[in-house]
Image 1 (cartoon, rainbow, N blue to C red):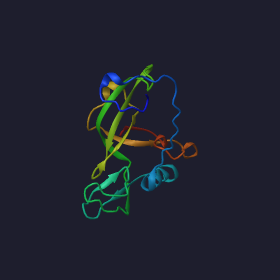
Image 2: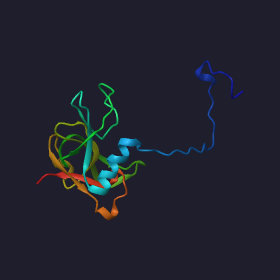
Image 3: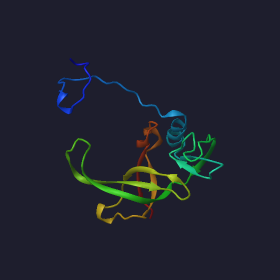
Length: 157
């Protein structure tokens, strides 16, 4: 019976076929403004906790440390440093890429958190931890209000 309680792993059985799942992701209050600022003004914004003195990027509505509401917004400079990275030779479907891509965590001075994004303008073998990088935005007419409005981060020249 499908509704019987399973008490042993051997009682499980696969169900074949498709299960239609529909979901819609919402940015939330802080995420909405975070992405709108990138889209409309080409800038990264963070939120600051006045109690803990932490600045969050991506922006949040509550502090992770004290659970206080975050109402102060600050513009974050578009330059940061590469905190970690990986070089990918396959796409999300497991298909081999013609050229490898670099994806990294960019952290900003004085900020808790960071942005995970593509690192461009540099050969994979030349990427290094701590490398200064700057934001590269898509042209304003091509921005849609998502993280992909950032084309990449590239090494600072």
